[in-house]
Length: 118
Length: 110
Figure 1 (spheres, each protein chain N blue to C red):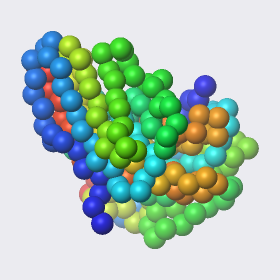
Figure 2: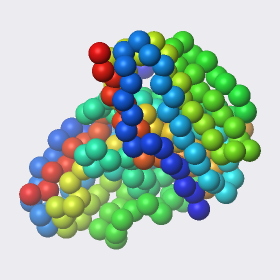
Figure 3: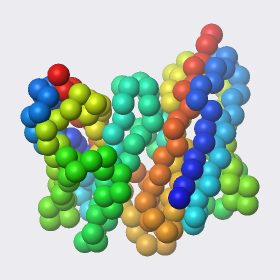
């Protein structure tokens, strides 16, 4: 079946502009994560959606960052007034996440969106 | 809170065995995952451990000691294509989400 998809694959924007990054998770996956990865660095957790629960926003670096997940499926990460330090690869992952089954925490990653802020 | 540590870089020779360690401190451990990430690509799942002991999958094995907060990934018969970053990740019952370690960059040399 189809994997996690993200769009756009590349985004170049000017400092101060807003950007929207999209993630289409695997159908039926209840958990959705957003991460940020700078060159040569590890994964920085941003936000986590699980079913209909309130999202865990503890990783968002500032109030310029927000995300929503509509209908328990597609998610959009919005960065307002972009700064040069926002330049990174933004990765989305989804997992089936069934209660009592640790293996269902396995994450399936999309190809990422490379954001460059000039 | 949570803390996950891995060596930053490792180098090993083609055909050899390498062990990549991961130590963690979490408030409520649930399970531990290993992912592989080639340069410029997204991470892909390798293995997971819930109980103490060794899980073997072909050339890759993963070990867990819950009492010590310790895991390792063992790669046998190294191939050049194994050059990648290896990410350790922990799930916590209290936070109900997955936290990734900083990753270990493995270089396999001829």
